Length: 546
Image (cartoon, rainbow, N blue to C red; front, side, top):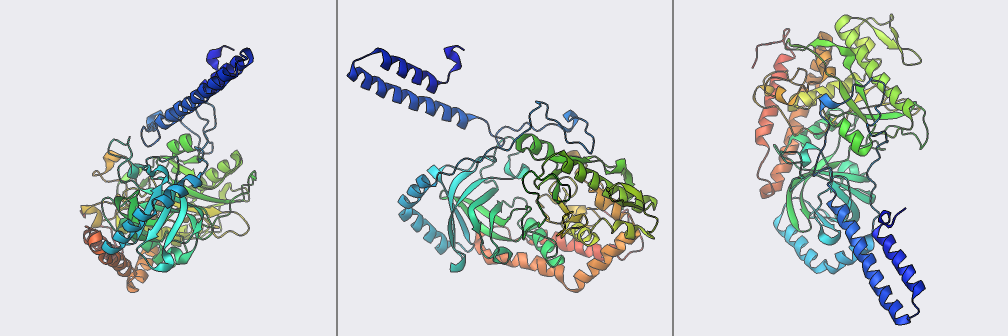
């Protein structure tokens, strides 16, 4: 092996050993020792510079187009083209002593700035100080930080060490989808579990997120509120509140502080296998994820494909299309191929049960191996489907997506869970954890059905984003009756209006901190509720409505 194969550090060490062994002059040895030390430092700096200059995922994306993806069996996880199993980017070792020194030295300036914030602002403030005052620009590498939460009740004030990074996909990128925007969403990972601003009844978690409202101020907050109120807490939905965000003294804007969608006790409470446990009888937290392929390649997140029975269905407005295959990311721990193959087979078969019962009046069920067999004992589609799908959760999820006109209703950030363990809280496939309602339909989307339809021409340039579950079920009279009865109960209890007003009141309390009061979007939502109140009670569907 030639000398060119050694690193700079190794070359320096060889030179040091050889020189010392050949020269008896002590002063020369000391001088050489100093020179070698300098060379080692330079070599180390050069290595660090190269690491720092390596493009991050947020700077240069190489997402694989759909046409270039390999054709996969729904029950098989693909092998990467480089034949190596992708692994998540390692989290750097936390070196808090340096940050503590910096934080303490900056105490006087920070105290003055926090006092200014409390004197001038209405919303709570999340004040992030990073090591070296470096801006947060990576979606992969966490930066050491101290998170101060101020301008709130004394019991909620906080100053804790954490790791922070950029989060999100399109929400974090510019229009070219190649660079992180100046005010991206963030993910905070505290070193210890923390309660934050009394959210979620004060329960403590390590991970929290800061979402950046872009188009409208109320979308995500209202989706979370509806998720909690309509289900009366039965199905998990994030809590949230508006905050002002500062990173190293730079004001980033008004954000929505929310919970991390994750499989955890008091969040999505599914069982997770212990390390190395390959039993399929565990819990699964899943997401319909249009970034499934990139997340697999870059983060090692497992996924499977759902082909929706290769079915063509006529939606509630009379348009017939064949469903596109979709990637489902698995957000719970998996060990071995058996778990991935099992959950893939299960979800694909649940949809087959839904489709066959809804469209063909053919009733199927699972046997003990979760293979499909005839369900001759069932007397109705509802009876067959309710054996495998939590219909209450589907109705609530549908109403939230319909009321807010969510364009991404079937393409991304759509979560569900099922748990096969003995202590399971989700014995059937359950829709929950509403997320990412930033992209909402406008205009006609609030005066006709939307979430239960194929993508209208206005948005088809971005691909078909319809939700096959909603489209199939809402094409049936029996499911629309269930939706109507639930809707009537919520409306009679004034739950829709209470949720809307709660979010508007939060924005009103923010005063001059926010420039958008949410009234425009609130008007759209109220228009959709009025439409549903009429349409769900009509014996026919007006397919000519705008």
